[in-house]
Image 1 (spheres, helix red, strand yellow):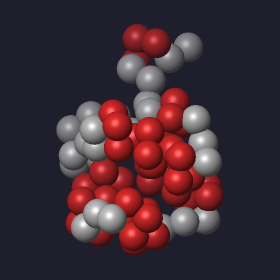
Image 2: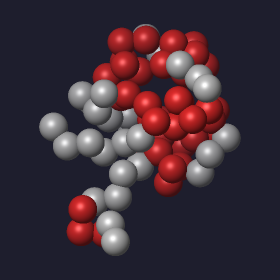
Image 3: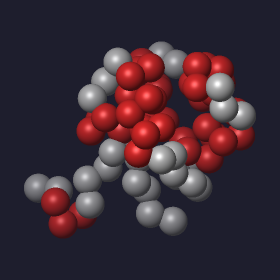
Length: 70
């Protein structure tokens, strides 16, 4: 599975946990865990909500595709 998001890294940088995010988002901690491990991906709308909760630009939560990284 290809990594598409940096939610786990951004949470760590903010000193927050997946449990904290699950509580903030009203989601099951298992769902957030899947996002953090890139097993599944949140919707774009949810990504914007996560960015808002973490006070970061939504771009900080995304990994650039290989062909765009330089």
